[in-house]
Length: 187
Image 1: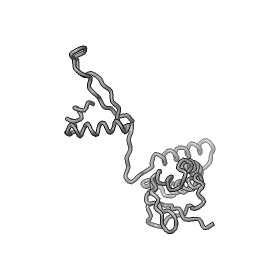
Image 2: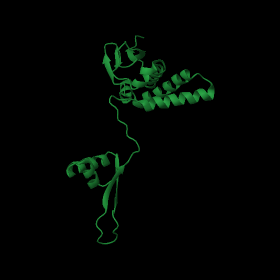
Image 3: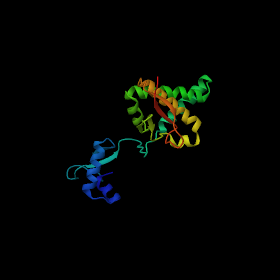
Image 4: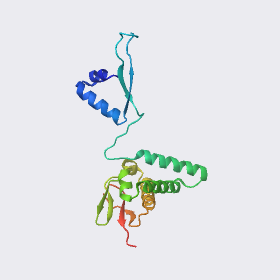
């Protein structure tokens, strides 16, 4: 769509529309192309119009952060492993989640960053780190055994991927935002 089409459709001031459109182009959310609109061609037919189109197929925003795509990938991978090997799905899921956690921990370099990057919102307390958010909240609500098992394996893999010897995965107290927490190791 052209800027003028968007202005009319959204009832925006031209300066507001221009500011936001250019910002979305700069941030990689929109792409532009210039082309002449209408039936006239050749000299005297006017300048090409700048057109805006989405640069990405899908945009997902969630508050608080949710990681349902990650959960879906892990579940699908575990089911595929179970089909191929005959391993029970729950065991395959824990192995897949642990391996993914290792990757996340390795990429982040430290556990707090890995957890923050993946929606857990870790907060330090006297016992270690409490998760102020569960990135799998809706799934865990109805499938707590399966999803909390995935979560614990993911967190343990993250600790191992970061080579974090200071924490261990433990159940969170009743009423916490997440089923697990990290406590300081006493080894």
